Length: 307
Image (cartoon, rainbow, N blue to C red; front, side):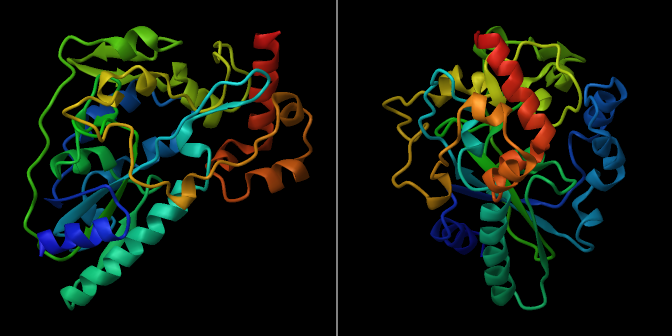
């Protein structure tokens, strides 16, 4: 059944798929320690989610297995003077809707194969450790930048989970590591990647992705020209550079529709837009997350930094 499930996931367009038992989240204690140090910044909802994140059964009673999937989103993202720098994942359609739709279809397929089973798709906003279960399912291992890295495909991919009450044969967990490489650490514009408590972690309060998306209020850090999100730690990662023995890194065989980038306006236009302009511009986009005031703030900061 697991082999058939993986084939169906690939048919739906996912690049990777694996299965792991529904167990307690391995990083629960580390996560609580991270929250206790305030590294989550103003994302108070993360603290509120602590009890829910402990076990998949808290989201789907009777959960026996977790199906993890990955979807490649890499595309060229050139830097242009006077234009907003947007993280590659947010250039096109909102990934939440794209992945959730595919996961729902995968869940419907699985429930038809295993009558009586129930499933629940989880995409980013659900209170669960996506990377923990994706690692256990064999999709990748944790890099120093805390991203999940697949040795053959790099890290340019979305993650999604399908919780199910069906008991499925697990796939093999991932093994790998960064070795002595510290490219992401040295390249991070704000020094947000830190080593503490015997592990690498992110201080969100210094992370440009957090500052441009989740943070409310003024920003003191230099955004290095980023208007929404930041890709620096992935851009410099050696695992994202195609090699002869790993040609799938940062590559795909076709261009999914959801990656079609929008015609984003200049920084000057973003800074002067009305709320109605913002509403129309960000509809169906992940960039909507930062809000009207946040996007204008980021554009204004960018304009001051490039003048």
